[in-house]
Length: 101
Image 1: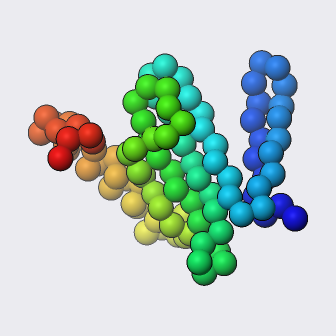
Image 2: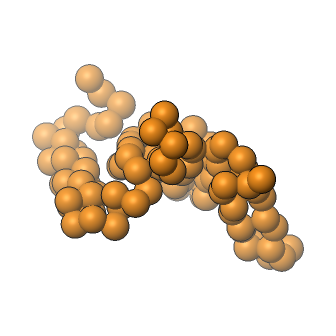
């Protein structure tokens, strides 16, 4: 039985995929990619990882959020998105990219 369900719409129509324990999806262009991973955590809750990457990539490195899907709907979780973008902006102003240590 599928726990996760995904859809994609392109020029050639819609496609769907189902996943019992996990789902990986990426939306890519030449300038950037948004990548998500959904999976069943050790606590039997649905978890998600949302990442960004410059350029076209299925494996994004800049992690915006990692946590329970239901927590995304809480105000503190939404605040984490804003803080992640703010950290990135500050790093860019300081001349450090997300790949630098």
